[in-house]
Every structure is written in structure tokens, then in C-alpha cells.
Image (cartoon, rainbow, N blue to C red; front, side):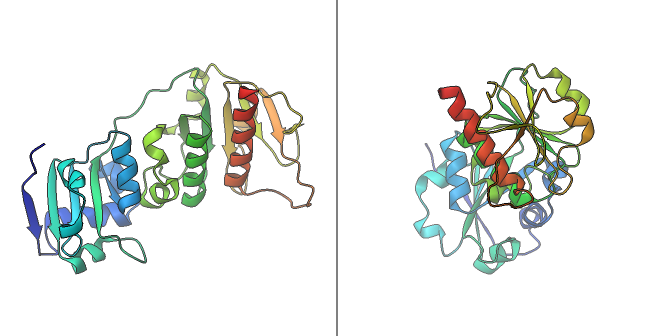
Length: 259
């Protein structure tokens, strides 16, 4: 593969840097711009491992001489940016010396019979990203975010997902009614009702419903559930963090399917 031409950027008013600042600091900017900013080698490696080809590879001046050649060759365009300018783009306490700009994936269509996780108005980016990691790890390759859920491709969710985004079919911003297209049982989680997870016969495939951090699954969505599940908590806490609950439920579901 021929090495791409390298562009050097030394002005903070460069249009690409302005775009990167928006993508790094505005959770919804990717929807307006149709592009994503992956900051740091871990996310970039995860994208490359899934066959994603970046539109632009961005490196700091100090890192560029030691950058793996495959990283620059994989991109349609390569730019090298003065260290201070690239650091000013970052939303991290310790700015990374490189990143990729990706085109936003096309909106995916809902697969009716796929193992699915439904996110119902989750607000916290860390929770959303953690659940995406669990979904990918336990074979739930479709994640549906209802309206009101944190933006799945936002920078904080991307970082919390640690590369899981590129292993998943992600569908954002749909209504509860759109779930009627699913042809798998809907399993609602609750802290106070339903079968105990460790005793339940879990359907597979299914769609797990994970609700708002404070309010749980909405009544409208819970009414559509065919199964209700709760997790035994012998320590007596009122409820579990939704990301922790999701990890426990998805693991139990995957293990049940293998049994």
C-alpha cells in the first residue's frame, strides 16, 4: 500500500482542528457532522481490528516519527499536528498523541431475531459504554437505544465502550413502538419483582431491557415484557447500578444458552 501524503498543521484555526474540537467536546456533534473522533491508540486499534478504515489519521509532531506505519497507511489522509494544538483538542486529562477520524456508520436496520439489548433512557455515558462492552462480550450483537438515551457515539461513551462499538449493530433514537419489529422475548429487569435470575429459565435469543438509572424501565416498555427478572442481593442494597446489572444478566443469559 502506498504511503499517503502527510499534511502538517500548525494553526489552531485549521478547519480540521475546529472539527475535531467539536467532535471531542460536544456529545451530539457526530450527528451534525457525520463523523467520529477516536482518541488514543486503544480505540484506534479496535477499529482497525474490525476492518474500519479511518478517513483521517492524526498524529502529534512528537509521536509521528515512532507511529506504526500501518496506522497512517490505513487512512485516506494523514495529518501531523503541533503537540500543543492536538492537546487543546482533547477532552481527556492526559491527551493522547494520536487519533482517527471516521465516517459515521450508516444507520443500521433492526434485525428481528437477534440477541438484543434495549437501553431505555440511560443518561450516564459511562453506564452506556459499559453495557456496550458487556453486550459485545456476551454475544448480544444488537443494541437499541430508545429516545432519551445518551448518544451512543459520543466521546465519553466511545471511551467507556473500549472498542465494543465496532463489534455491535447500534440503532439509536427509536421509539418504544419500533420494538414491535422484534421477534424475540423481551426480558425486563427489576429490583422488586419477577423471577430470580439464578433460578429462571431464560429465553434465547431475547432482548434485555435496561432502564433509566433512577426510574428503571418505563411502564410502557415494562408492559411489553414477556419475562421479568430480578437479581438476588443478599447484602441488602436497594438496587444495583444498571451497568453492573446488565453485566450479570447478559452473562447469565449467555451461559444459559450454552448449557
